[in-house]
Image (cartoon, rainbow, N blue to C red; front, side, top):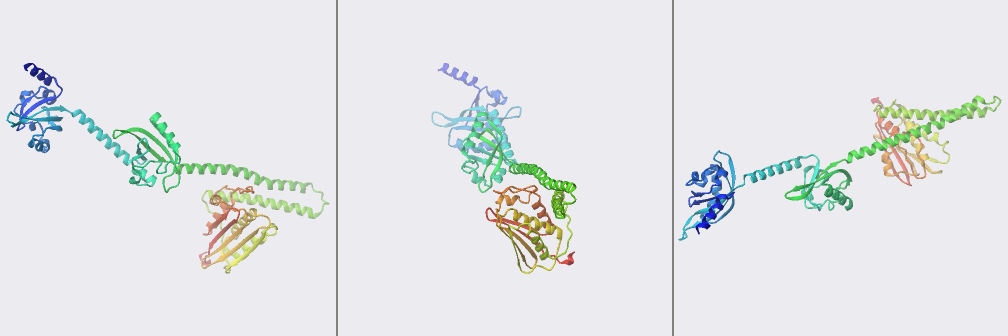
Length: 487
């Protein structure tokens, strides 16, 4: 037995843990040498001292609240954390385990136990908690949308930026997969992204098309990382919405293409009448003076007609330049008979388009005069009537109708021709846009409708277009009735 006692004593003294024993009042009756390393005391210094004396008053009170109910029932305790004060004053976090012991008569004598220094572990845990809190704070406050998902795609959490961009609450997101929510249009796209994440640990700025519920499709830049989150492998994803950027880029590309097409069209449109002017001028120059006067007049008429075309094209270019610079067009209002102006515009086109039938009707009488720019409104009506003819079949009907109420006058020009798609209608006022309709090649510079819209707006009016492919197009101009006293 003495040999076993010595062996046990050596084991206790060599242990990295502190062995102790205290009586029923928690006064130490035995302290192993390990206490020197843990708390800086010699074992003899602690004999007879109360275990709670090694703690601050607040800590002693806290530990008593846990320990007293256990001690009253003479129960063992496990992993009881308590902060002891080292002899030099710094704190040491102790993890205590104790077992009650009794005399031969069963009388409670105290506790024997082992204390272990867990300061390093606690510091690590505290640092981890602080790190996790910092991560959560950054995650929550990040203006870039972010999610944390399992490897199978189940959303564990999302930050406010993501709930805003997705239009879904955190309750609607957590516990569901991105596929289930419809973010990924196709499972293979997600599997491809996941494969790259698992292979390389991350993906950066992968452009994907997502369709959040109840929202139009969006373009997102997706960056993801494999992370350890709450002891498990998770995927942290950051999502940058580039939908507006991509739309702007598409619009810019479209404009660049339109400009390229415009340059080609301008070269063609300007060259055609110019060739006629030069050619017939040369014929006149070389004409035999004895030739008939009628032929001379015909050549001059052709030159004049083509010169007018050139003049209109140049004026259109100058007008669009003003529009592009944000400058108003030159509008000179005067008292004009609107009825006569419309009648004249229709009549002037009738001989030039004998294959089309023009019908002019009025709902209510038009005002006797209106304060408008006669030249500019004639320009608008000619442009719209020519378009109606251009996109109508031979023999087609062009309806021009007016309607007057107390505050406004409207003019509608309707054809029963090729019509336009919704997309074409949306683009019709864009600079350089020329609608390519099935069976009809686009002509002109693509400036006419841009100028028309600006002229109408400069008259404080508005223009509306309705069109159906194969059924025709209706353009409606609305002008306010302005008191002549205002001018």
